[in-house]
Image (cartoon, rainbow, N blue to C red; front, side, top):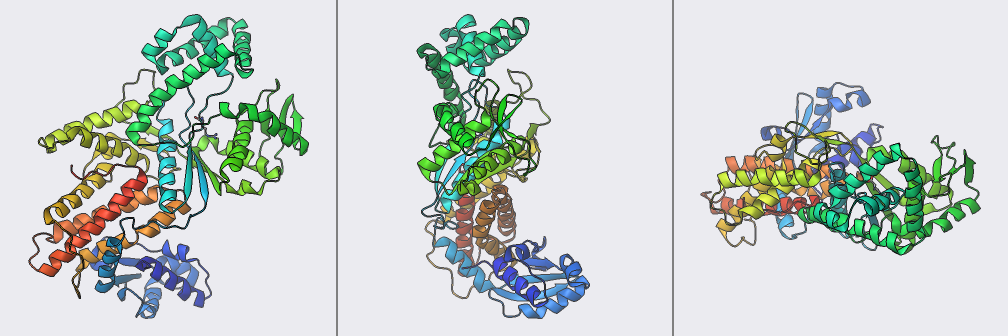
Length: 568
Ligand code: ARG
C-alpha cells in the first residue's frame, strides 16, 4: 500500500506537469507540511512555494488545485485556506493502514537489496589513542546505516578499519622499550600509551637522534621483526580491549577489524599498478597522482622515503574489499575534515580504470562539542566517549530512581536510556551540521530526545500489557477521529522515511520521524481514552493503533541502534 503523502505527491507532480512544470515525486513530496493543528487537516501543501513557478497568487493556486484532488485514493477532502491546500484523510484508509502495519512486525523492511553487498567502513579509531567524542558520529551513523541497509535486504560488511600502522608505532615501540613495562601498561592501559607517545614527541625535540631510532623501530616492524611485532600486537590488544567496552555499551559489532596494517604487504603491487598505468608522477621527491583536471591537489601515494601513506593504504584496501566482497557500494563514514582525502583517492581509483569507483561513497559529518557542564577527562580537554556514556548512565540512574523507585531492573533501564540519549542526540541533526551536546536537551523526558522516544515506546508497551491479547481485526466501518487519523497516517509513512534515510545516508530522517510519531501518539493519548473508551469499537481500534505505534517506534529505535525499553 502506498502512503497518502506519496499518492498526493504523485498527483501534485502530475498536475504541475499539465501546467508545463516538471518535478519528481520526491521533489513534490518535499513541498508538503504537516499542519500543527490537526483541525487544519492531516497534510498541507503551502502554495506560496509554487507561486513563483506558476506566476500566480497562493490563494488562487490553492483554490484552483483543490477540485483536482476530488476522489483521490485515501483522501476525504481537499480544502483551500489562506494559500494552503489542506488535505483530510479518510477514515477507512487509516484503519487499513493500521491493519497493514500489524500484519508485519518488520513493517518498513523490504528485500530490495537482496543479492547485493554493501561494505561500511566506520568507527575506525587509531589504536594507542583514546576513543574520543570525534568518533561518536562515525560509530553511530555507520551503525545506523548498516541497520537501515540490513532492513532493506542488503548484505552488509561492517569494517573497523583500525588506524594501526604508520611511523608513530616506531616511536611507541622505542618509548615502551626504554621507559615503560608490561606491568605499567596493564595497569593504565591506553592512558600509558598516550603518555609514552607524548613523552617521546617531547624528547625528540631535545634529541633529534631519537627520530632515527623511531624510524629504525618502524622499519623493523615493517620487515617482520618478531619482538617489534609482538609489542605492536600488544598495543593493539590493549586498545581493542578498551574500545570493546564502548562497543558493548553501544551494542555495536563488526565483521572485520582489518585495519591499515593488514594492507601494508598489499601496497607494493598497488603502487606498481598505478605506476604501470602511467598515473604516478614525481613531485618534489614524493610520488603523486595529479588531479589537475578535477581541480584538486595531487593525491600523495609515496613519501620521499618511499613509505606509503593514508591514501595509498585506502586504495589498496578498496581493491582488496572489491575482490573479497564484490561490494555494490563501499561506504566510508568520517568527519567532514577528510572529505578531500576521499574525493582524491576515489578519483585515483576511477583513473585506474575501475568503474566500481562509482560505488565508493563518502558520508561526512560535522563536529560535536560538549557545552555547559565540563566533563572530567584525564587527558586534558578532549572529551572521552566512555566518560560521556558513563555520565549519561549516572544521570539516568538518578532520574529512574526518582520516577520509579520500585522498578526491578533499574540499572539496565538507566543504561539503555543513558546510552540511548547520547546516541539519539548524535543522530538527531542533519549529520553535516556541527552540533553541541547539551545534557538538558539530551536527557529531557519531555523534549526532542532519546528518553522521550523510549518513554513513549514504554508507554505503548504498558497499554498493550494492560489490555492483554490484541484483537485480531479492526472493527468494520469504524470512523477514526482527527488524532487517530493523524497518527495512523504518520505511521503509514514509516517505509517512506526509511527510504529517505537511506537515499540521503541520513539517519536523522528516522530520529525526526520518530519524534513526530511520538508527538502525535501523545496527543492521541491525552485526547482519546484508549483502555477506558466506552465504545467497544473505539477501544479495539485504539489498542490496535497503539500496537501499530509500538511496532513503528520499536523498528525505528532498532534502526538507530537504540535499545527498546518496555518499561521506564
Ligand atoms: N582512522 C581514521 C581516523 O581516526 C579513520 C579511518 C577511516 N577509514 C578509512 N578507510 N580511511 O581519523
